[in-house]
Length: 220
Image (cartoon, rainbow, N blue to C red; front, side):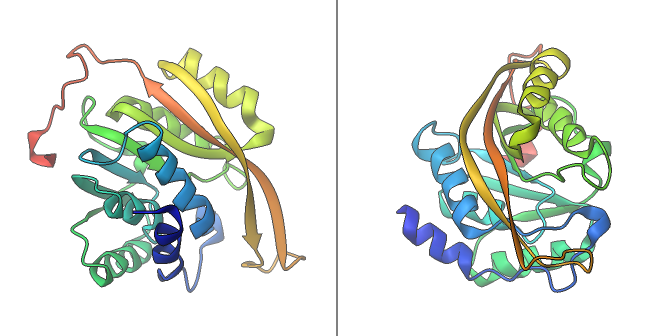
């Protein structure tokens, strides 16, 4: 699938009707989402025929992109049941076979590296400090191949140090800097649109003691 075609599909997805500010629910736009997953697949081969988990999937944009690019299996996880309903409808509309799990990613009970790739646009941590790092810590425990994540560019040094020193990443690379358009979704937003500089990261987890073998074959 070509990049423009992928972006077009993502642009037609349903999004939040009543976003929750406490969860920092900002939709991942089709421009960023398409480039994020297209890069993961075409530059690194981390999507096609892989088990992909979309952490904090919201309306399912990143997971849908992974499925459209040929992922073997996609699992979307979110703490908000209303978001999961929208994500499920988006998958159904495109006739994609995806699974969705209602859970708090921080308390995810998976053991070992049971997915190949994690993709995520985690909370930036503006409402709850450290929320983005909580997501990253778990992602690097359960992914055997790579973690793709968006973080504010202003936190670049902190993210790199945390990933390498605290979360056992073997590498942490900023693939590019993007402009994240935050629409006027909440009452405290005084401008119709704000551009935030965000980094697209690729983290490579260290292999677990089993050599990165998928621990749960039921996900295959």
